[in-house]
Image (cartoon, rainbow, N blue to C red; front, side, top):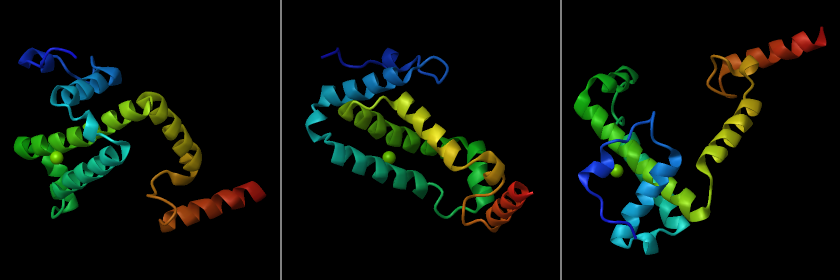
Length: 147
Ligand SMILES: [Mg+2]
């Protein structure tokens, strides 16, 4: 087991310099120091990620769409949201470690699958298959293929 964390362990993390592997190591080490690995079954980690996602949603629960956008200009509210994002990610990275999932390749593969499922030509500017504009775009695409 590694030495316990000290403040310097956390000082140099940023999106530009930190790898997914660094984040996985951080959360695994955090759990090892507390002997929490025994509680980290895939079921418990998946449930915990969902619970933390609900806590993230709670931060926006009663806000109007405009108020939710304004969170980025409120340092205290933004920090609370960032903490919940980190909680969700922490459980997801723990789950990846537990199951041997390579997060980056899974993320890329799923994004590619979504790109195939939601072609930009059909889904640009529509929120999904239930959007009335989608049906129009799909019909227009079919009509263009017939010509
Ligand atoms: Mg939380």
